[in-house]
Image (cartoon, rainbow, N blue to C red; front, side, top):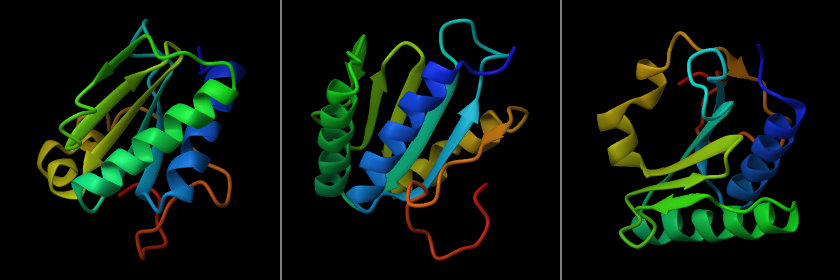
Length: 131
C-alpha cells in the first residue's frame, strides 16, 4: 500500500515550508510498506541550530494552517535533530552534521523516494534528489 493522498499533501506542505527557510537536501520517503504508524518521512537539514529552529517553526506554522496537529515533538529545543510527528507524516529536521552521521536515507534506502514538487526540494548544489 502506498502513502495516502493526505500524507503526500502534508509532506508537500512541510517540504515547501522547509524550502522557504532554505533547508537543504529535502527528501521524502514512502515508508508506508515498512511502518504502520506513518506513511511518509520528510527529511531536511539546516546548516546551524538557528536555521534548524527556523525550519521547524515554518513547518509547524504551515502544518497548522493545513489543519495538521503534531502528535509528538522531540528535539525542538536543542535544534540538532527535531522530529515532528503528524501521524501521516513524520518530519525530521536535522543539523547537516547530524544528518551525515545518522544517514536516515541509508537506513530507509529500501523505501521509495517521493518526488517532491519543484520549489520544495531545498538547496544542495546537486542535481540528484536522493543524497
